[in-house]
Length: 50
Image (tube, rainbow, N blue to C red):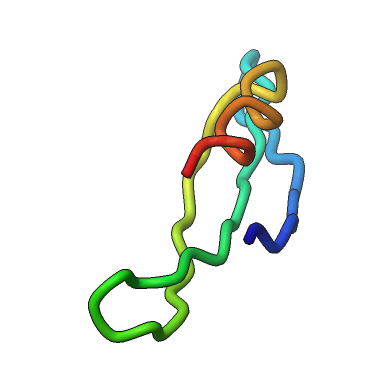
């Protein structure tokens, strides 16, 4: 299950995107949020991974 929140960041000459994904813990069943800053081309691949 992924909560798709994407913000576009620009720093000097590189264009970056901050993506936030909601991940369910297998032990407790609670949800946690995982954040990552990456190029916009790899966001969909990152969000589709478990």
